[in-house]
Length: 349
Ligand code: SF4
Image (cartoon, rainbow, N blue to C red; front, side, top):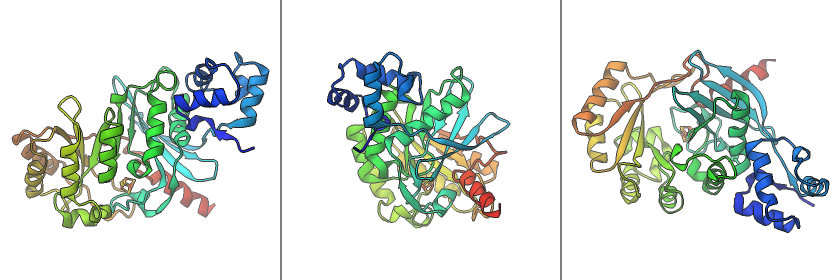
């Protein structure tokens, strides 16, 4: 009999599964506690379950812990992880410690179909979607590695992959992360970042609107955006902005606009003015992201002074705009870099 991936189940599904196994209903909560609070690696460690229950679980369900391939730590405490999945695919996760909270950036796909020009992950193309458990296991593995006294409170879906092209599995992972019997994170501390998949944004508006939405805009004209984010040809700027206007956001739940600053490409004062016009009246916060160059990158980072001028244009028009700190500069900080480096290293072995 095929075994089910138990960590891909939300609480409701776990309850149904427990019922199907003929166990008492309260066992579902106990199992969830073992999986997500005590984070055990086998059913045998679930010592408050009978031997028979543990046998049934091992027979019908399986666990897929991630294999840690490599971890790099930056001088600012950022830790970048390379994990291997059951099928040998590799993904990255990043732990970012802040003064009063800790954030984890998770991947949602192996590779990415979006093909953004400034992104190293895009270079390898797309392999497959991650399952809910493969997303959730990133949290579990990193939390275990950094230790319980550095609890991860915030999760950003900004790693490898386009989360809204893997909607169902991302939604399930969010349910597991926010269920009080499971990882018990606050919904407001979870951010899903998209390049602007319009049907996905509309679905998020209906099914996941307690989670924060971030949109990677990166350009103010379709001409530039078609080049930087090829998916723009399918979902042009006008349609994305219309979806954001339909989105149930307000000043307590602002939409984040991500804008990577590329020298001479999208960082003119005209761009800043156009951006201000585009988001006018929307409850947004703009994050200006200094580009993190990688070897062979086709772009240069915008000089700091220009980023500040760009920011000022937005503030002068009452748009909240912040310059995002670039973390982990001394390690393979760009998304996809650790995976690529490791692959190259293995090829020359
Ligand atoms: S930036 Fe994000 S969406 Fe774009 S190709 Fe890279 S991983 Fe995919």
